[in-house]
Length: 468
Image: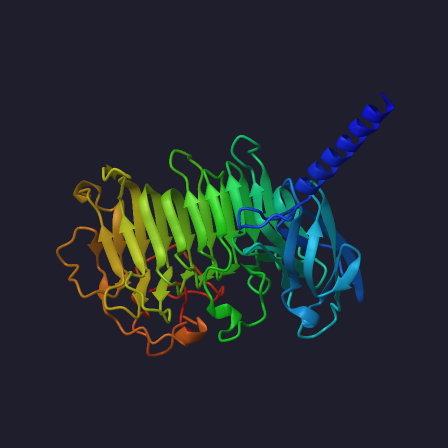
């Protein structure tokens, strides 16, 4: 009996060892990879002196065997302001890190930033790269280089003051479908807002009030301010998403400067009776469009819709829009095959069905539509607006086009192919000079000043600037 007992114990030990060996074999093949508990580490601590803070994340092995991470490295190595510690060991490069089945390792990240450095970019970035069985994984590291208020995928309302910059990561939403609405956000004069890649200031069935001043505008742009290797930071369009007003309540944008977005301002209104007012605002260097309307109720006065990789203005699918003394001028240094302005009253569904969306009102009064293409206005319409003459109208506008406008019922007293002679289109300066042919060509208007609050004379000049 004792002999049989010892034999059974011996067999059990052998079985346990065999199972253990099988479970703990090293897993090979690209179907086995690590998982990280996050893909981004954001340091939003307020840096007021030279200092450092520490965060961590986990690297998991969720497989039934040992997972060997071939390499973990801090991309910028010893030149990085970040420092990492992998499972208790500091360094910038680690090899052959084994993680037991169902286990994980901790990776600690520390950053030291001197916010008083004169050339310090507002945001510093690095990456931790992982290589496992031929698979690559990365965790992005971001740190802000001065005091700032961060909005990371959150619902926002109330007041944004100008005492610190506001940084948007992901979404800053004034209302959101099925979550919240009827909110209000007021942005004070002088407030600086920085959007990370794809960041968006989103307004849903709520109100946005941007209250800039002539010498203290509200600025909205990308969070990367240091130049790229081959390009200045301001030369790159599409570095953040922009402002998107969806079914917004009555909203206004005054004395704002918006640049380097995908779409500077997008307005989708449709059945909502509320209006958006944009006054004395500059929107430049958007990837797709500086202003995009879709069924919007919009009044824009004394606004500059400047350079864009595609459209300075994309005005589409109905609504009530009015642009008075606005300048659409696209001299972007790109191989652009789009007009500066497109005016379109239909859309095409995925199954190629044409859906008409006529405008209730669409007026362009005392505007400039110009650029470095031969034709800078496309009226892509399928509705006949003869009976709406006066409600759908380009009135006293300067338009650059190879096409004659005399036989079209949308135009009244418009001017073709005048010499713009702007101050400096390369520097986005579209003020008029004494050689600009837009001077004194405007019709009577209730607008008494220009984008710089300089008084307008009678007859006033076309566009957002009044020559002095």
